[in-house]
Amino acid sequence: MNISDLYKKDKTILSFEVFPPKKTSPIESVYGVLEELCALGPAYISVTYGAGGTAADNTLAIASKIKNDYGIETTAHLTCVNSDKEQVTEVLKKLRENNIDNILALRGDRVPDVEPKTDFRYASELTAFIKQFGGFHVAGACYPETHPEAEDDISDIINLKKKVDAGAEFLISQLFFDNNLFYDFRKRCLLAGIDVPIEAGIMPVVNKNQIQRMVSLCGASLPAKFSKIMNRYEDNPEALRDAGIAYAVDQCVDLISSGVSGIHLYTMNNPYVARKITEAIGKLL
Image 1 (cartoon, one colour):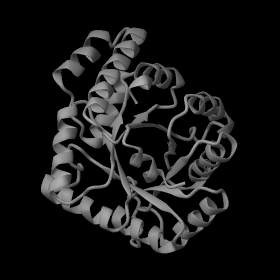
Image 2 (cartoon, one colour):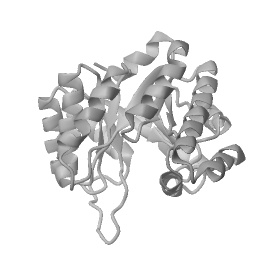
Image 3 (cartoon, helix red, strand yellow):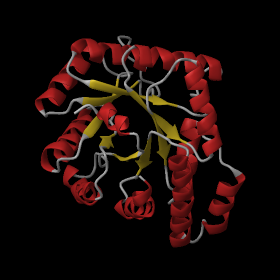
């Protein structure tokens, strides 16, 4: 199934992201999470990619279980910064063998003190390679507040256009906490001729340190309203969780009312949070 076809129904879709367990944990440790998330009926579930080895194998196993055991469409993340064409080809063959035909093509994070491979410098090059390989539908990532390594927002949009021109059929945004920044980003995309569906990436606040770490990696800004929540409830985990859910729901309601193509919920493998948000916005979709 081509996930991009889901956006043609003229309504906002809801999808989830999950990640494989740490290398020190068995893959079975995530299966309970999958069962609860699949029961919520998302349009699809994406599975993040590990930097080689067991983590990468787990991405494949989890994506396969979601689609082939639970009957939920999935998209497997695939990074290229530490892979050559031969390695990517092997992954594509395994994905095909497991009936997985949607891929989120990413450059991936560079590993400190490790020289990156040179076959793929950018996600656009990986996207083009996958499309040439054939048989897959490809999604791309985008940054409403500009990629941290981009020179400026103009060059960032130019590079995003290259990714779409290479074959990315829809885009999933990095997390953000100010919807106006996302709306401004959509306008820039339209001006640049980027007219594929763009899903809004939403991450509920459940842990202050976790959010601050993610923000430092992707460059998302923290609105005053959001910071007040973290500062007020950082020593009360349950209150912070509930306030974070309420903030995410507020974002989602505004996005849906503004006609966003989709909402991609970064679940952090937390079915409780995903369920509360799904129940709150389900009838709006």
